[in-house]
Image (cartoon, rainbow, N blue to C red; front, side):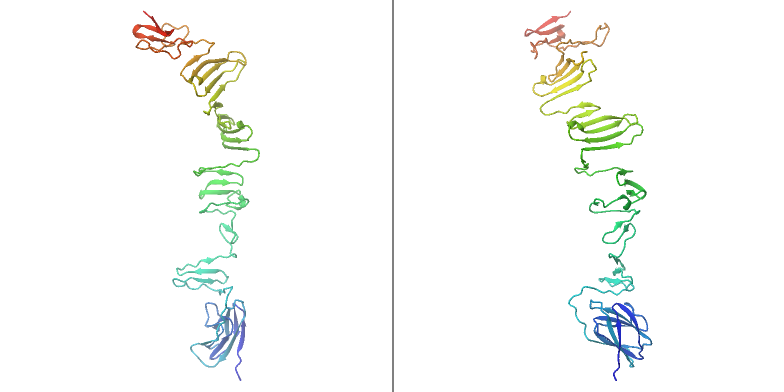
Length: 443
């Protein structure tokens, strides 16, 4: 009567103890698309077993077996199927296993790879890397140099300054980044960064430190605060672009008031009148809260220093006026007219109030581009000091003199003025009259 074999059904990737005894040896068949690892009277693991029974094969193995067989079945079909192993006890004693193969079916394609979980394998030889899985299903990549890095997947959570898992980790609250570097700029999309959830110190601030314990820049969710160092912009244009909210723009940079008044730079870009678009530099005036407008630029291309208008040279000529307030006596002013053309047309005139409200003495003194100094047509020209003392050394009127008799024709002769000079060798005061030089001799 033929011997009946024992059929053991082993679920894929599991190990089972099967009661079995054989005094000599045993024969086992594995008709499955997968291999079986067998241990005698002890537990088989992926790295510790007595015999390996290949897929769709059979073999005759040495015994004896006193109590049980431990079988670990690994499916290779790709379907995770249960394997059936058939064993026969044989009284014959053998020393070396004998195998015969039925032949494993060849798969045309596969969508999975099964890796047996277990303990770390030995390091592979040079030129080979080894993938293995621990008992928790974590994958490792072992190299011949002794390194064994873990391969991360979406199940693993981050630690330290990172939270969450791949592919979308976050920055841990309360964590400080020792060194944050990027080859390309770091871009924060709207609403992706908030003070309580990023690199938080105390108070929910985002802080940038040059070294541990030294904070250079703090963002409190609304404003940037520089505690140390300087704000440096790259040498490119534009360096800073301020937003233009509806209704125009008002921005200021103000230094702290330490009891002497405010020092600041402010910009007002309201549109409308050109004079309303200004850039102003204020300096503290020594009174708490007070300030002096030191420099102002406006949309009229005008510059004011301490409230005094400084005019640029405009193409086509420029007519300017610096005028003092009329306090009931008339207007006092300085007028400049620069139009090019004839030198006499370029003038600087000084007007003095004449005591009549709303009127003034016109051009009490004029300077022109010909180097001429003119008194007002209706005025007198005074020089020196009245009631001149006999021993005075200043306060004189000087006239030009020369070592030779005058021969030239004065440019403005015959236009209502008499040119004069002194000729020291002859002690003569010379005047150009009626087309010729005349002289008066002093003794």
